[in-house]
Length: 376
Image 1: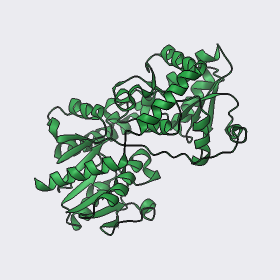
Image 2: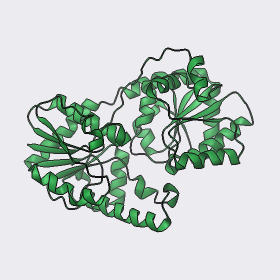
Image 3: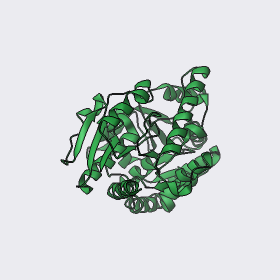
Image 4: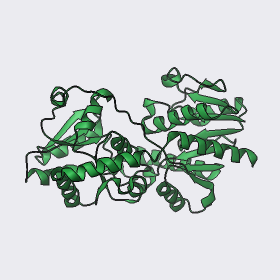
C-alpha cells in the first residue's frame, strides 16, 4: 500500500501537532516493513526528518498551512504519488483532494471557543477566517474514510458537533509522552535566579490562549499573596500578544507573586520542572493532556482543572480544582504548597500514569487502521 503522511507540521515548528506527527512517523518506521510511505514536508523541516526505513521517502511540499496553495496545489502533488491512502494529522485537509484519507482531530477548541479574544485579527477578518476554518473542518470530518480522535473526550465532541457522523467512523488512539529529563544537575541556585525565580514556585509552561484559563490562575495567586509571600507562579513561554495581555492583567491588579520567565531552553526547563512545587494546568478544554503527562514523567506533581478530558487522561494522578472558580484554584494551590505528603503521593501516581501511554502503541493502532481502510 502506498501511504502519504502530511508531515508539514513535523517537529518543533508544529508544536503539539509536530510532536504527534514526528512520533507517528518514527514509530511507523520501526513497526512497518511492508507498506511504502511518502512523507510530505515543508522547506523548514525537510532536512530535520531523515528516514530510518528504506520504505519511507520524503517529499517537498512547501505549501503554507491554511493557505490557497494548500487547497489548490497540494492535492495535485498528492495525486502525483498515486496514494492508496493519505493521513492528515490535522483538520486542514485540502477540499479538492478526492483520494482515500484518514484525518486526526486533536480537539475542536476552535469551534468551542469562537471568540475574538482568541485572535489579534479585526472582527471582520476573524469571522471570515473562522467561517473558512469551519468549512474545512466539516469537509474533513464528513469526507474522511476514518477519523482518529486522541481521546474519548474529543470523540464525543466530534459527535456533538457533527451528529450525522456514525460513531464507528471515529477511532480513539491516545497520544503519549516521553521522559525528556536532561539531568541538569547544576544547583538550583545557579539556574532559578536566571529566570527571576527566588521562592518556591508553581510552574506553567506553554501559551496562554483564553481557553487555557490563565486569567483565573493569576487571580488565584493574588488571593494566595494576601496570605503568604513565600510562593510564586512562574510562566514559561515566548512573548506574544496573549502573554502581553496577561502581563497587563497582572500589573493592573498589582499581583506581585507572578514571574514571567519567557522562553526557557529544554536543558534549563528540565531543572524548573524538577524544582517546582507543582505543574499547574488550568485549561477549560483540551483534546489530550500531553503537557501534564510530560510533567508527571519528570516527577512533578500536577494540579489540574477538573473536566472530562483531564479525568480521562490523568485519572487519580492529578489534584483537581474547578477551573471556573478562582477560589477553588487558590484552595488547591494552598493545599499543594502546604502538604509535602500530598506532593509525594502525586509524584508516585504521576510516574505510574505516564507509563500507561505509548507512542509505539499509538503507531501500531494507526497502522492497523490503515489496513482496515485498504480492505474496504
